[in-house]
Amino acid sequence: MKLQDTRITPSKLQLLDTHVCLAFAGLNADARILVDKARLEAQSHKLTVEDPASIEYMTKYVAGVQQRYTQSGGVRPFGISTLIVGFDNGSKVPR
Image 1 (cartoon, helix red, strand yellow):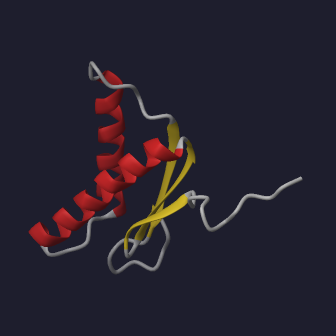
Image 2: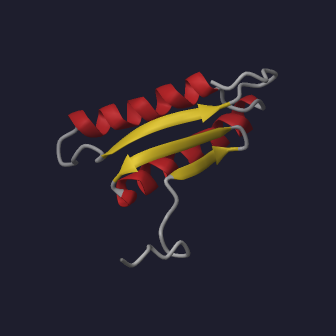
């Protein structure tokens, strides 16, 4: 039995910002698109508001993107399941 090469196999756990991670199961290509959009939104939020995006904000953003892809014509739904984890600003309790 041949093991996967960890140098080329993408990680199923992606860092969106310094305090938020997204774990996924499913198609790597779909996850890459969603992670790129979420990272861009996290950085945009940080530059606009000057505070890091909360876990709740990032969760709602990712859910909104997935919902738009599900209901839009001409695109297919994401073939992934996601789990968002992290710490909110000032809180030491994981969410």
